[in-house]
Length: 42
Image (tube, rainbow, N blue to C red):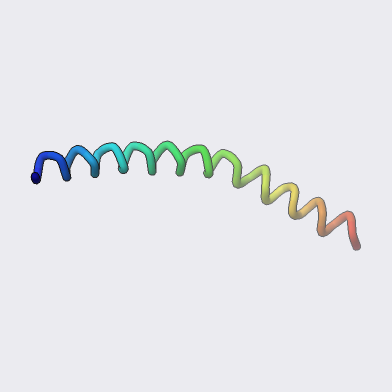
């Protein structure tokens, strides 16, 4: 029981880390886009 929980947790952890790194790469692009949109509308 505990072994399977640890396994699930490790899979979840790696999935979370992968999602987080992908998200981090997209953040600067999103921020730049938002700044551009705000600047363009003024």
